[in-house]
Image 1 (cartoon, rainbow, N blue to C red):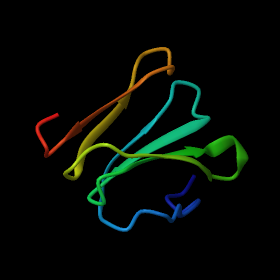
Image 2: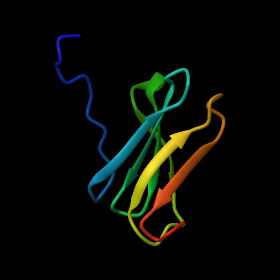
Image 3: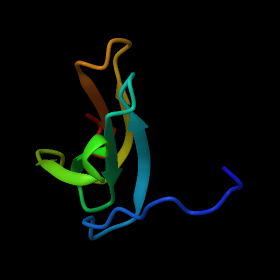
Length: 79
């Protein structure tokens, strides 16, 4: 595409520091300063599927494993 905005996903209440697609591009994970990870269904218009909680500080990094079945996160809470 020519660099135009395709879609905006809303839902986090803090800065988003990391995003990652799974291997087939059907899911997107986003990690935020609101201490949550959100899972978006990109094959269904970016519908919010789930909000993951548990970190006590902002999410620095999210990444899917090579087959897209697991998600790892790193946080400023040292976990």
